[in-house]
Image (cartoon, rainbow, N blue to C red; front, side, top):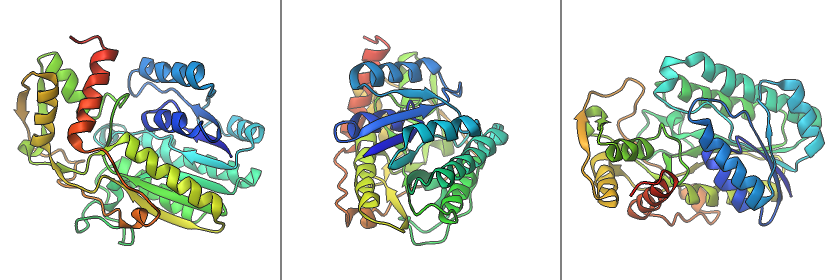
Length: 316
């Protein structure tokens, strides 16, 4: 199949493109925004180009006419829509960017797909849309109450695709994705960097936080499964959780980082951030019926990230 990945130089897009290119013709697009260090995105792009032969077009979803022209040229069988402004806490400081990039940008993509008769789209959502529901979170429950602009932009995306004219769409609610080449604003990257630099790490809600941490390879596995499903079926509009399916205490997460760095964190305990959710936990039974089976426990995943971080940033 011919597949176009939006947000291809992003964390998940980078890993997904490398895996998919073994069996598909893959290309991507990315706006290379400066939300975090662009060098990280450019280095991912270099690997995709030189090691995988994957071209990543510099293109913003807000550039509607250019988007239409590019997709018309690519003629993909499936679009994987990962492009978005990420960051739960940052969305409280700059909500307009999340509305423009996540809602308007997605609207432009849907219109382009309608115009070009692109009939199959897999898109990224988030566990944030289920905040407040009874744990573990299931796909068939009503949406929770989004506590931040990022969450409500993703809830809007689900409504946009479900109500669109696109023949088949599958939305994926990701649960706290982590791994090598991750975003600098995410806890694992931020904590590792701070510990290495002997700076304090902020532990929100006085460290009493619980997350369903999901290694990026397991996320990619789940995406591959739904690509096969959407390729084999027409007229489907589905939502799936992709998580590891276990709860991890934040303090245990920090312990894993400390052990792999062989250094102690300077811990700064602070109140709950207004954008945050106390606990997350995925029910992945729906995706498991299609063959999903996450493989990477938290200890192994943190080890792989720290190993990459030390190599990329030349840490002894």
